[in-house]
Length: 524
Image 1 (cartoon, rainbow, N blue to C red):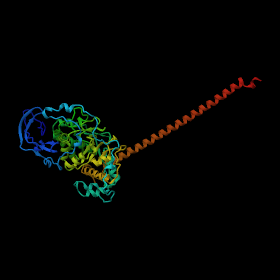
Image 2 (cartoon, rainbow, N blue to C red; image 1 turned 30 degrees about the vertical axis):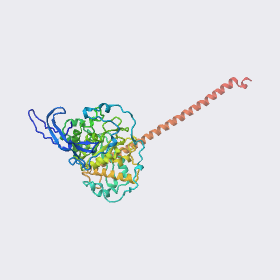
Image 3 (spheres, helix red, strand yellow; image 1 turned 180 degrees about the vertical axis):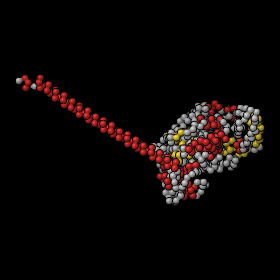
Image 4 (cartoon, rainbow, N blue to C red; image 1 turned 45 degrees about the vertical axis):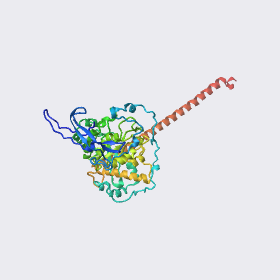
């Protein structure tokens, strides 16, 4: 049984009723056929479509007949595929027996039995083992950098992603600016002076403004699991729109939310932050919430893409295994629908800590390039999950694989280390994705070219004041330390002098005592 459509009445008084019409496209009845065609397939046969008040109570049902099997080898036109969905994740399946519903879970014992071997079949690159130079293309040409073309980012607000002027603007950006922009995306989006890009604030808080990093706190909204239990898409739109207004009050544009992984287990550590165990309910609520966030001017970072369905060891080389059918029908679905409902790219994505098989999700080109950008047509930017020096997170690998910016702060290792033509071209593409998302956000809504927004001047002023206080504090600490050190040295010197004096006095007394009692002269 699969959920395919739902709706919600308005508030009904006793005795009132309301007619609802539920519709869905026939394509949505298709299943992903991993092992035969490698595409979505709508199989020939009779399908029972039931109307239910809950997952158990059937109110009515009808049969729908599919007279011949349909293989979507050219893509699903209704679902907005730009590239055909086809097998891309065979490396994620692993050597596992997956539980099947066939014949009443006939393979239950086999699927739940302990493995014969715990040895990993594959190589996990981590802890410094990734060498970007191995993957360099000798034919790549170093792009133009640091040019003086007289453009600024605001000139391209509203421009198409393929507008040739992007290349002119990107020619102005220096390698150092790209490195800085990519590395330090923690709760901010750095300024790029050569392109006239202003600094923008991003922050966490799926249930409202709640950032100890930025020192801002606001209303506590309900979490996504509560929102999803309302089954109310209009409410989800309003929820995110109002939250966006409060974010705007704090001049924060990027929102690390909504979270849309699946309740794979009732014990999931972030279940409160995810919608539900159902992909369709999660997708519909995700589309609604993203819509409200974009309407408010924010660019939401939908997260964590993908298969981040557990918190235990999620940033400790967690290898996640799945079939491609489960990935596409369940775990990808909320992300896919949210992306396809915003084809103009006014949103962002946060990649995840875990591995897909033995490939880190944050550097997996099959996930971030082929599916996200290729099949679904995503034009926005991708940020990593927090770059916490966990060993396997590598900025070079991430940027080449499709993550554009690191959720990094000073002191971590999110710096690009390889500056070859291959790497710089990847950095240039990442910079474009960041530029495209940010310039089309509310951060530039009232922007005056060539100026720094008043609120940003305040932020810079606060940053400068904090920096000054930190410097002053450090000076005072150093002075206090030196003063204490000087006092300790002086006290030590006094003690040494006193001890030395004590030793000299004691020696004189012993000498006098010897002279009176035992010196030869005293006996004459």
